[in-house]
Length: 222
Image (cartoon, rainbow, N blue to C red; front, side, top):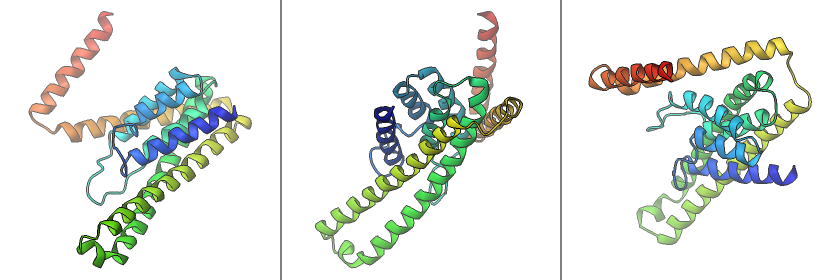
């Protein structure tokens, strides 16, 4: 159990820093982050389920410019920690709700981290403008380390909350069913909204409709 939690925490740090400050290799996408978390906890199906659910919310996010957005990768890890090994009817809604809460906490922490990084840049503006390689290096390293600390704190809070929920289920069976309906419905609405915004209204939308119809027909033909 302890080794799984430590491994999950390490994975969370990799997911957190991948979002912006390091490689940006798509590890931070909920579908990837949650599926790997599910494998770590011995429930890849549960991880994939939560990955799809949180990915629907992430489709609505456009991480550009100075936009503030949730860290759905870290949120998905917390969601999987709730779901893994638990009955889906009880845990899906709770996992999704906790995942969203942790995602927004991660986004807020990222905003604070960027403000601190900005202040660090301002303090060293003269040396940076002069092209001082040593100062450039250490400003960058400090920024990455701050993001590591942010990821560690957020994932630790998420995993702790998840296991607290598993020890003392804070909801009745009926409430869990209703919460599941709400979370899944919200995810579908976010996915539709994000898809329509990304595809636009002309040729891309036509291809999207063709793919949607083809997919529905394929399901019925199976």
